[in-house]
Length: 361
Image (cartoon, rainbow, N blue to C red; front, side, top):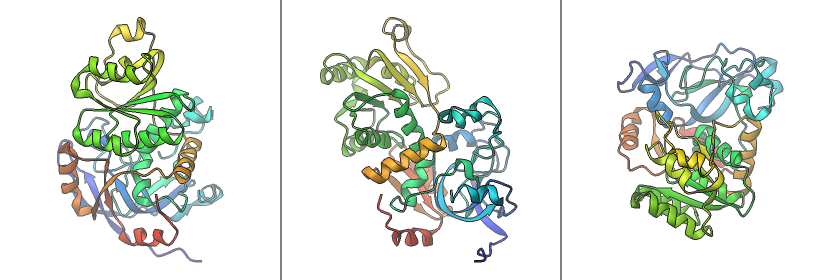
């Protein structure tokens, strides 16, 4: 069967100057695929905190830069037999550094990668995006594009953070920042894995979302550190959570995450404030073990999707229809009242088509 004919131009939401609003521009469709590359027709693309960092110039991204590294859609072209052989199945890891050669769970840390979608190479806020088949995960028919787009970063990040805790069924995990885009997914993943979940947040919207997704205990961080620690210890026999994941970039969040964790427990830091501040008694007198964690490797990503298909984890999304809605999306995101993830439905037709495949999560 001949592949569908592709347009020569497409619309894309781009950063054209740092610390300036996005612009919608007409750009070429990237049809010059290399080995391992895929061309994906974007169905849904999601906004992430990283997009704001790109817009502010934190990563010195080359401009103009198409935004969004969270996307889902349909593969319409493959570049060479290498992509086909992966069974379809960030752009161009080097393949030879210690991270790429293993263990598999740290391949995503390759520092010689030639580009990160939406950060240093063109992203998903466009009609089409070029991606690498080695870091692209096939979706089960049961998972919708609306849920899948946020999973590309938010889902994969919080999923791996839970794996990094090493907890077993029945143990206590705490999420500081539980009512945000990553947090509400973490609460669901924790429950799906048989953990007992504590959610800590400092917004009414976040606390409501945490509770609605099934956290066993919900703690209001606005009551202060001492009250938060007391609330966690009351339900954990005076010990504290067995491990905590810090998703909030508030200045006091990392310290709070350590404080609500039991002695000798683990705190996994995934939020990215300019500085991670932890009082020395947490590290020295209480022996809290701090880990950093990034997004998933390919196999970890597949495990996440398997969990979702089995347990019905869903991403809370606020959809905007069409790229031209980017102004409304950013107003909502920066207004501080959002629940879950803001996404743009780029291609309505794919949303209708996936219903025939049984997409339900």
